[in-house]
Length: 197
Image 1 (cartoon, rainbow, N blue to C red):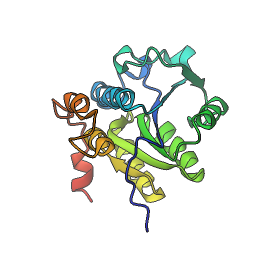
Image 2 (tube, rainbow, N blue to C red; image 1 turned 90 degrees about the vertical axis):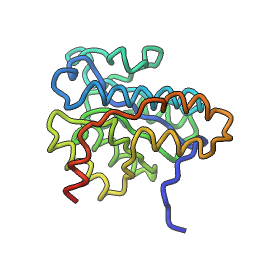
Image 3 (cartoon, rainbow, N blue to C red; image 1 turned 135 degrees about the vertical axis):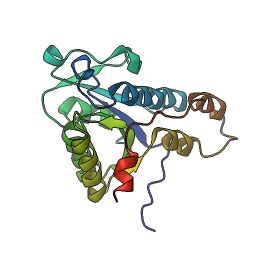
Image 4 (cartoon, rainbow, N blue to C red; image 1 turned 30 degrees about the horizontal axis):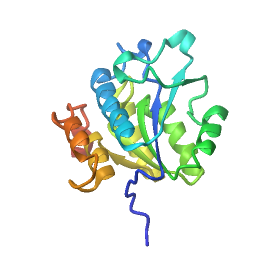
């Protein structure tokens, strides 16, 4: 049967890429992107999905923004555009080599793209949370998402990820996840991308 990209809590990991202070003023829809990524992180904690956090050259670009809610996580510093640095590879091994990665952060055409290519080459299924991913330029963001879809990544949304992970209103954690969905995700400018297809 063809791989359809059904998410599972058993074999997944959440990647949180470079949501740092210096990007706050120049990333398109930064506040909403971080808000959506924060909900994915909260859901991962409720559902027992391990999160992995990176920071791009934190000495120059600052720490992860506090509103992500990741202050308890170890942030892996990097200079490469991929999150798949040696320390992250070791963590994935320690987690039993998860089969699915849920990816949030910035920038879509740089670190998100390079991370996605590396994950796909390792045979890991990639789910890019499109309303939790951005770039400085909306053009770069939209073309990056289109390009990554061509490479085999799944494009999804914050709310879709949360609902697919629980699958059923009878899920023991559904009520907690439902609270995260009390307010719809903010519009992050993706509709123009799909209306152009």
